[in-house]
Length: 116
Image (cartoon, rainbow, N blue to C red):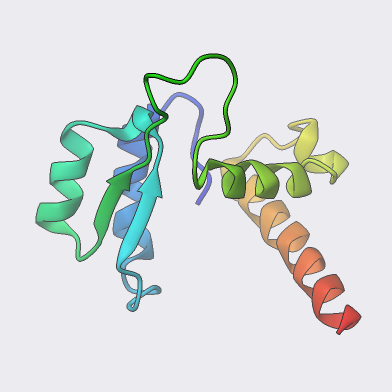
């Protein structure tokens, strides 16, 4: 789901959780970074059938360290940004951006499956 940049991420997350519920019936656990901590965690646990787990970086680590699970998200973003149309924000409507993400991910999956 793609939404306007005017929507705060935590509010946008609620929209995503409501929308994906009928499609991902076996989904149990969702990892999120510290920006989603707070009321969103209790809202998800109360109104959705998922468990939202906040993955935090260790406070005692100095310098740059990879946050566990975060690399999965960053890797996916790097795959998507190889597609010029996604990296340059050409789209005016969020629905069009969402379709472009579907096309890019479909291309990535087909290429991976064809290697085997």
